[in-house]
Image (cartoon, rainbow, N blue to C red; front, side, top):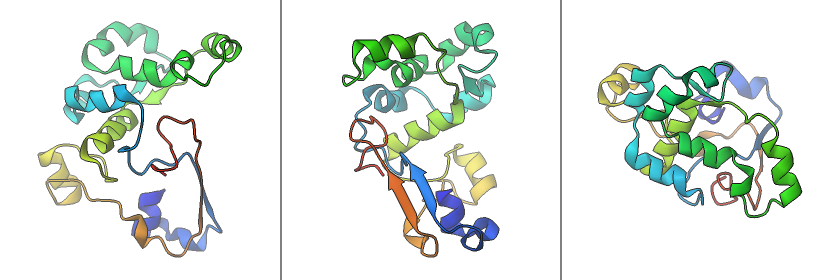
Length: 170
């Protein structure tokens, strides 16, 4: 949505009165999630393309878990979705959340988070030099300049105890 608003896609200023962003992440420099930052050193977008695993914890996850975790940072997903990881959750909350199936997450989204943490910027997805040239016309993905958003008010809601969507990140 930030890209669409910054670049004027879809004439959104005529369609929106306000953009409400819940836990927006424009930069992960201040994120406290260690596994996310560590993952940037081990994994790249090429893994996403080569393995064809597009979703963690999705409908077919149990069938592909072993193979996927050889290539992808499953520890990252587990840390992000593990209620025991958060020091502010009490034991009752942890048991309730742990009894439910973890939410699915887009592999591309997780890699984009890692790229943001690695590069300390808010940019389009980095597909690698060759595909970036095809897609964007440059070797590096373009920065998403949210300062260009002028015609649509934005309300951002962040949490003090959110490892990713902190007030500094939003």
